[in-house]
Length: 475
Ligand SMILES: [Fe+2]
Ligand SMILES: [Fe+2]
Image 1 (cartoon, rainbow, N blue to C red):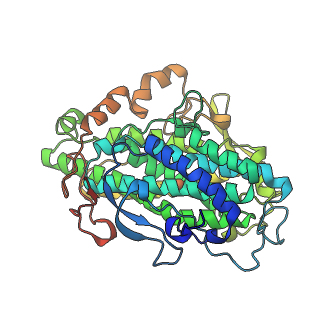
Image 2 (image 1 turned 45 degrees about the horizontal axis):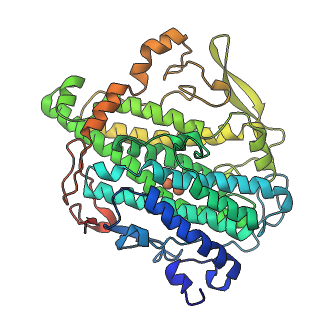
Image 3 (image 1 turned 90 degrees about the vertical axis):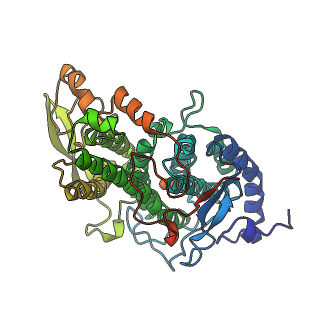
């Protein structure tokens, strides 16, 4: 294999051409990755050329190179943000010591687990989204879907690099297993439940990329603080790509709303039946989709009290969001934090040691961030002069993990009986009718510059190209 030009085939800044051990591991894994892509990647896309950005280096000119490429020929690369000289650990019990350039023996199992759990979500989302290309609302949207898919593929490469480089034989086995588990599989599912759910339609896709890719952002931000420097640098680079995924979600929902309010004004109605007859997605249905995706995603942060979270923090494996900007001692031994539970039929706050509540801390930071986009969506509605407001549901609504798991709590935070829940859940979460209606709108529109009836065109194209550019060429 010595004739391979590694920087050409696998763009990287990890000195791959000099690292024989890493070359051997990646060369064995790469054909399995391509097989996985062919079997589980975007359906019906083999012959299409897609206007994709590829990272070929970490400097500003290199990280986003655009051109038409076949997805299976995409140059999935391995990039770490540049290292900081003499970086020190800035939180936990080892604060002030040198950051680790290798994996300390005592943290090996936990670090491997963290990397595998993150790595598992990346191919999982590609699998969840693999049918969506068949019902794309436009060529522009199809290109964005494919861009996200190849970048989730690159995120998988990023985690596989860490496993191959730092975890020896078990790392190679874990990297193989990342291609063997499959989203929704009965025998061998993905690790986290939200990544085993279907992404059945484009509204779900936009909600997923707004809410669930944002969970990705917060997990990556927490790992970008890690004392294990290669993990910190890898995740920092991944965050540059994640921003586009969340943009696709936010602008996708925003354009859906735009089209709906335009039709509401044309027809001078907020009648759901009339709006559905006109082929747009009514605002109450959008609210139910928000309720669903918000609640399922905040479960991904884990139980509100977790001794693992405390261990990961104190050991320096995983920090808080923007750890470096916080004013406390970054050890948190005497600190407390408020979590919610249901006692005697009401929601109550209780103080617990902050170290055990770090999942909740990250969840709360996520909630603040995700509410920002909902406010921007509301501006689209307000600008159209329509008196309707979308809101994030209460944190305790529809939870399936931690102390709120299974509690019956309304989107505005009232504890209700099972009977009240059953009577009203159809107002709070998407019903079968909602889902069937949204599914009925999904038809493929791929003529350049044309858009499905339920969604408005974007304000701008990708990389300053016009909106009617041929982003995808079908051969
Ligand atoms: Fe990702
Ligand atoms: Fe993503």
